Length: 481
Image (cartoon, rainbow, N blue to C red; front, side, top):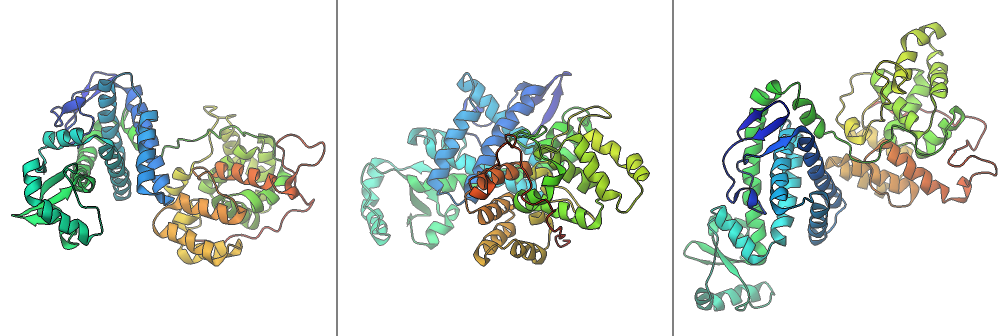
């Protein structure tokens, strides 16, 4: 991909075509077309495509059938990538892919994720095309896959029927479309004896063609991501450090859900926190909270992660100051706390500095953090050792089957799904997916309010959570990872 800057407020992607150009409905994204885009659209187009990719990840990690995933992808594509015209859609498709390629080329983990999600997106879009559109696309991309003629089908019909009968499949007829594919491109079909071979070609039915074309897409994108990474590190990141680089680097950690900069439901007081931490805090915040209760101190990363979360659940500024002061002054004079720590708490509430009302950290920001020695922030599913994580899950009284389900998600790097699985095991009900610690908290309160023990007492404020006991819950710290 060739990259250049056009003007002060617009960016142009490369030169050259991409097979069918911007008018093509599908693309291998070999080269970007000349398309000018404003900085606002540069980011918004990428976010719209990212919403589709994130939903694909959620559906796949929840074990949905391939057919259901494909249907979901098409619906999401129409919803988030909608434009006034086909030409605008083609341009948005091209721009959004290349922007996200920049964002996700920077590390091996990011490349792996982007490759998997884009491949799933391409598969669904290709399978949704008509046979004529699929044939036209393969011709545009110069793929050596040719649909056989009616005469050629008649000459091999008996052999194709033998293959179908050996696989307990319906015998093909003239309505079935077969493609001749070089046999070396379908070794898995050849080894499983699922295709008829003749003179170096495999006769592949149209319903199996998608996997071959998708393989081509995946191979080309793998190479392209490596080249884009080289271009990013050697040229673009430095040249665009004051304009595009911050946008691109933030995209891979961008949270696309609800805004938790303001508490959505009622007021939570200091007296509520111990009970809420035990019942409704996600594991990352529970770990921070009880280690704070035990050690009466957290390093900066932990204070930020927990402090913003507590703000999001409804702890007001004055209570937040009193809460942190009461803990820290167990080990230091009040004057030291007021001088060195109170400012950052007021700052998070928008009362100091730039007076920005900061939002609580999303799961992605927490997962990609890098806690050091003595830190307690981060994601337990990502940063704990497997032994410590297992011990924590068992301490929360998850049954062995649930523990194994969570650990399986962790081993496959599906950290947010591991958190959702923990939620479901604890609460006995499905989650709506976990993308934010405050989202976990809200879902937990809703689930517990369905229990008779959680019905608010008469006279309680709407949305206000009261401690069941006048005494704090025992504050046992979680194991240090």
